[in-house]
Length: 292
Image 1: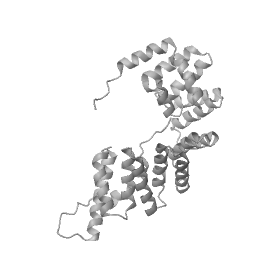
Image 2: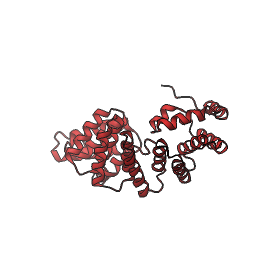
Image 3: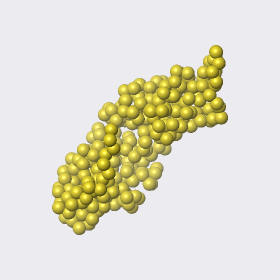
Image 4: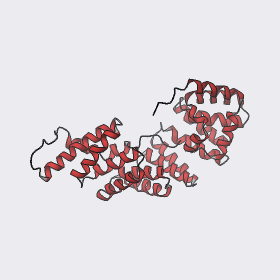
């Protein structure tokens, strides 16, 4: 699994919690012929709080102009730059997002939330080494963030540093016992390393945590099918694909960090006639894509 959380959650948790306290209860300054610096700052904080609230409801396009204006009215407020950068990331404008997040980091280098979100941004951009650097810096500031440990594991995975990836996944799971994607990804690594039984054990563990998690269900089905345990494999695979038919797409599997060995075995599994019938049914029941 590639990611499990909204990209903005860390920023909202680490960087914006005190904006609400400082701006709460403050009305926007009404228009007057002249505004002093303090008034401008207060107006900026009010806009920043509005933008943060809109962001919580995923109203990114509405939040963006408020965040932009907040950075102009309160240019020394690192939280405004952090939110602005995060919004650009949500809109897939990675370079702009990273630029503004770097500005926020310059203003407040000890805020771990900014480093966390930079790590995610660099990952999306494909710069996994910088992603590792940002996430490691963030975890030095606050080591008790399971999601960041998980993301660091993913970055190590993409760099081929598999043992380090497993270590981060295990640490993430140790901090948050409901974090099944971490255990799932340990299974992904172990399967590529040829440790099939260990991978099976990890995927069974993930399913115990969330019985509706399609990814470990399908991975387990493929592993069992490869071992010749077809009956259980086909039952699990059918359940997984009915939960989420996207896992029949090799590109989607790659996006979720499935390796070459597992994808190759998955293609063999998906070619089974019983599974082919399921895929047809799943395709027929999918809602049509929304019109542009």
